[in-house]
Structures are given as C-alpha cells and as structure tokens.
Length: 149
Image (cartoon, rainbow, N blue to C red; front, side):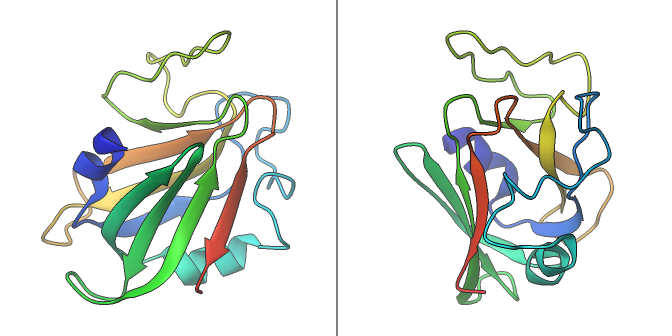
C-alpha cells in the first residue's frame, strides 16, 4: 500500500488502458471476468479518467483508491482491487512484490497479464513524464470493481 500511495496520492488519472497487455493469451482483449460486475471499458473510463487520487487504503487482499473530481476534494468514487491468489499492483520503476510462485518481469512494461493500467499525471496535472501503475493477475482470481460511482 505504501508504495502505491507514494506513487499515486495527489495525482490525476490521465489515461487508463483496460485491455490485457504484456503478451498473455488474452492480449488485447477486455477481461470481463477480472473487471467484474458488468463494468465496461466505457464505464471505467467515465468513472476513473481525470479523477484525483485522494487516498489509498488496504485491508487484507483488497486495495482501493479513493478518487475525487478535484485535488483535495471529496471522495466521489473508489477503484477497488481484490488481489485474489496471484494478483499484484506494480508501479513502473519500483521493485515488484514477490509471491510464492509468481514473479513479475521488471524488464518489460507493461508486465505480462496486465488487466488494467493507469497512467498518472503529476501533482500539477501534467501528464508527462507520468507514473504507470498496472494490475496484473495471471490466474484471473482477482477482481477490479467500482464503488460509489
């Protein structure tokens, strides 16, 4: 949580990519099993794009970003990520967490089995250079959900 908080808090989601990337078997496809509850790419874009990260919270395998329409504003939506058994949130350029039998190749971006990638603008709202955040899940047991949207 602290790594993700350091990379995203006070930043704006400039762009999101909601198709699988990194060379997995579903590369280029929207994964409606992982991005669940009938959330479509359009709904994700409308809910997340241009929102500011106001807080980062974690409880067990669940991590959520509290999002607002303005920096320092009121939370109006949450992006909830349930890690499942092999899910991980990776920040480009930061050492990836190591799990029992699943390791992320840090030399390639986006990582293999990326389900959702967020490109964050800096604190002033400028998109370049940006922080990249990817949710990866090779076994597809994790979930990406929207709350309060």
